[in-house]
Length: 130
Length: 102
Image (cartoon, rainbow over all chains, first blue to last red; front, top):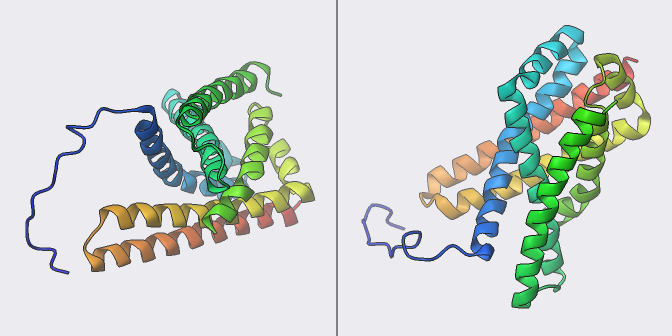
C-alpha cells in the first residue's frame, strides 16, 4: 500500500445536501467521540471520591463553575443522544425500521427524546434534586 | 461485543443517569453511602467495564475510517485500547476502595 501518491478525491461535504439520515449518523459518531473524551472525567471523579473530601470538593468546584456546568450539559446531551440513537441502531440490527418513512420518524423521535431527556434531567436535578 | 456492550449500556446508562441526577445536590458523604450499597458498587463496576470496552471498539472504528497509514493506525488503536483498559481498572479500583473502606 503506497500512501505517498497524491490522488484526487471527489468532493463530498461541498456537494451533498445534509439530510436527517446523514446528520444523525455523523452526530452519533461525534457524540461517541465526545463521550470518550469525557470518560476520563468519570474515572477521575471516582478517584477523587476515593481520595477524600477535599479532592472531591476540588473537582466539584470546577464542575460547579459556569464553564463546568456548560461542558457537563453538553456532555449529558451527547450521552442521551448517543443512547437514543444507539437504541435506534440496535433496532436496525434486529432488522426493524428500515423503511424510509420509519427511518425519518425514528430519527426525529431520537432528537425529540434526547433533547427532552437532557432538559428534563437537568431541570429535575437543579430544581427538584435532593 | 460492540452490540453486547451496547445492549448492557442501555440499562446501565439509565441507572447512572437517574441515580446521579437525583443526587445532584447531595454532599460527599451521601455519595459515598450511595456507592457503598452493594448493588450500586456492582453496577458501577459493570458500567466501567461496559463503557470502556464499548469506547475502545467505537474509537477503533473511527481510527480505521480516517487513518490510512498502517503504522499510525495500529499504534493509535493499541494506545486507545491500553488507555481504555487502564481507565477501566482505575475506575474499578477507586470504586472498590470506596466500597471496602466504609
